[in-house]
Length: 138
Image (cartoon, rainbow, N blue to C red):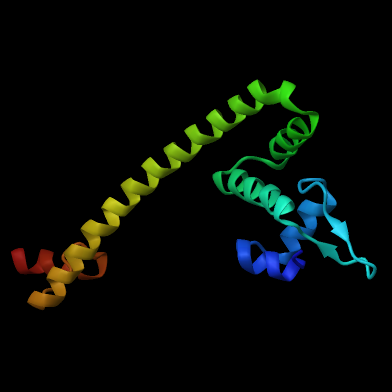
């Protein structure tokens, strides 16, 4: 069994967030010890993993709650859960595409600045230097 602090460190989720998820039914089956401290089992860590995954992709709390409720209803909800996972995966792939485009821009800028540093050049695209370059051309 794990304390909320241990789970927070293991799963990289704040204790506050874990308490919120537990209080609002996003993590079923959490037990409490005789001092009323929440204890997480390997089983409940599985709930934390899926909730964290869905939230990180941007799934709203209401939809995450619906997913958890469907899981608790049983196997008759597998088709609906499957659709939720497919939709979430689609969102994640779109986010990856966007991040790839952002990384491409950052790679370009990294190489651009590296070249400026290596050749001791000024940044002709920096608006602060723009007037200087215009004056040189005149």
